[in-house]
Image 1 (cartoon, rainbow, N blue to C red):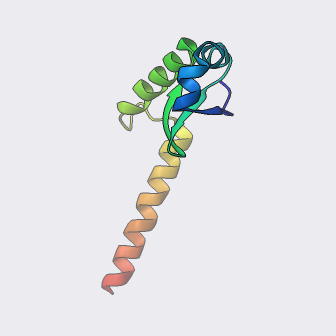
Image 2 (image 1 turned 90 degrees about the vertical axis):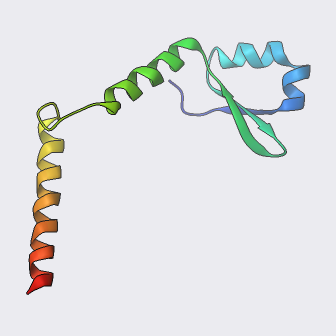
Length: 89
């Protein structure tokens, strides 16, 4: 999935919808309104990849966490506990 998106205004969307859709099939397209990003149009494959990634991140336990991430998490908890103990002294 390309991270570089083209940008069009809502006025462009009404005038150039065919071109914008054709481009959105290749890479994400941002639609702006009053110079602010309002929408993103992307192809179904990229959308499904985003959904799949969000599903993976939504549920997990320490048992299912990758070893490197679990180790980093444990180190952070230990460092926090040491700081907490030293502040009580």
